[in-house]
Length: 410
Image 1 (cartoon, helix red, strand yellow):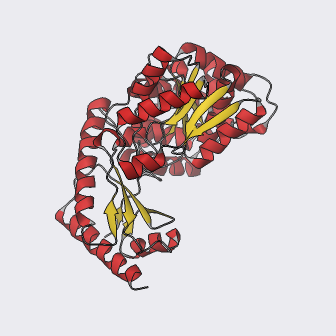
Image 2 (cartoon, one colour):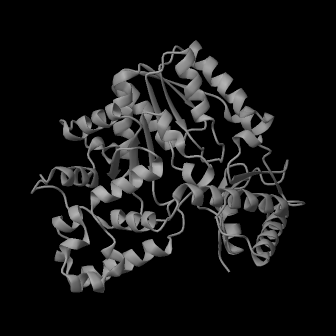
Image 3 (tube, one colour):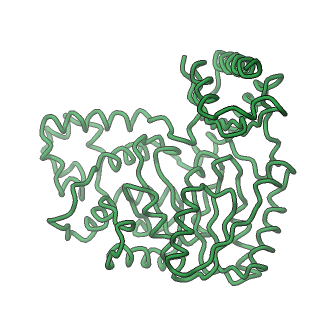
């Protein structure tokens, strides 16, 4: 039995997304011309009735505007025009960073930011002649049990001391630390000159119960293959206000001096809203859009579902922590105010510090467990939302002990 505990990395495809992908493959074999501009813009109603009956999963596609409306509802923003869809999340982040550095001269980041995204922001800062300061908060959070309030106080003090006027932060870090973004932004607006807030929300839906972070930021950037279960990567940017949305659109429609800002899916979905699609645009893979739409349409009472799934993930994390007893690992004791449903475990002193993370990850895969491993013997276990069965708990316990004994003896 395979046990997937790495949803923070890829996420498992939900049944609705899988059905759309299967029907899309069949449609591509039968009549790919049905993937027309009217279909993309207005949905399956552009097809004859018999075709709609033949492809029931694709029939629920109602066009790009409807998809943006669904995302706007999911993130709690009133206007679908604030939602942007792209092939690559990194390109959306780069565009958002460009907008940020037009307004902010010195941006505060942390050492919990995802390294690849941190590099993008730093590159854009250099491109615009701006400064980026990285605050060190990982060590006190992971080793000294800092609370959310201590994080807020430290970042607020650092923001003022460094004379920052913008922030780029993860709502939930890749290591599972849930940063108090809304509290920090509220305090910054009260006590400092805050011009722009850019949030990495890639992990947020899966790992925190309240997703109202769009209200406190100018732009948040995320994807849909993790939290949504759409499987196929697609970038999403949500502007927290109409001004930020307008500025993003200006970058998209303005002169593109660098291919780093150019995204075919982003161009197409924006052009579909104006009915002026370029004849000479690049051929675009639209399957991620259809897959995301199916996955999102399949979620009912979104906020309640998220809260319920989050609670179950926390229960699962506690079960995994119990499975680590008397093994080579022990859970990192994060304060509850910054804890998400990602469980981070460190190796016990002198056990697996020399291990290559790929070897460690492969060891668990041979036991039927998929999780993430990092240098120094660290493990990250990202919880699914389904209830763990006794068989799951037994398999996980046996796997942890087997891998622990294997590497302790090596």
